[in-house]
Length: 293
Image 1 (cartoon, rainbow, N blue to C red):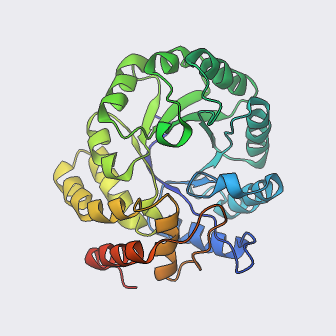
Image 2 (cartoon, rainbow, N blue to C red):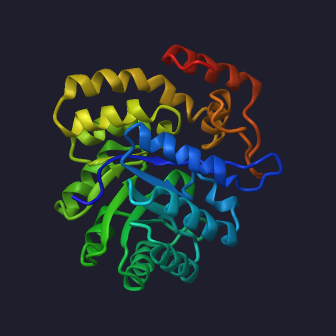
């Protein structure tokens, strides 16, 4: 098992002029590590990767990986809907010292399964880095099939899947078809415990941005077979995790980080602020959880 435990898809903080705030990013990294997070994903969906320039991405890798300094594992979102660009970003992440590259299925292009196979094959052949395939059809408009994933297990550096289809059956099918050759990790906070119960190895979490200790504890209890304790935390986290998706991620979680004083909550366009109605719902979910705001 290479990919396991409680990972955070860390938010990218911006200053009041919407420049990347590297000092706050380092504070967020320390907050995660101090509270039991096993790995940090930079430049994921939650990190607003699509709104960040290539130059900024490279500096975020440099600053983030240097500050993590091997204390936990690191992953970088390198996937795009352009195969050659994805290859280049993956090579840069490898050069900067990341442990894993998270490579999303190409969005908007809507490739067929043969195209997906060839895309991920090309990326795998270009690097020695461990690759995690990101299956999130609600974002991309295309899902990678379990049969295609089974074919891709011939590449030894394709080691896992971030499964965010929202369907337990889909994760079961992937585990069954890939015969244990890939580590499958949850990409849906509310499904983490159900997915671990069928053989998944952890989570890449949005909710962990604000309550990393609780998410980590739930995951580790579940992986250790302490299901009563894990179930108790699952239900404690459930409404809060649902609130993280009141609107498009990362709008709610960045707003929550603002309420907690972790960041100023700034989002880059085209994402807009959380609606007043949902701000009230989010505040209640956080208050009910016991977070002081």
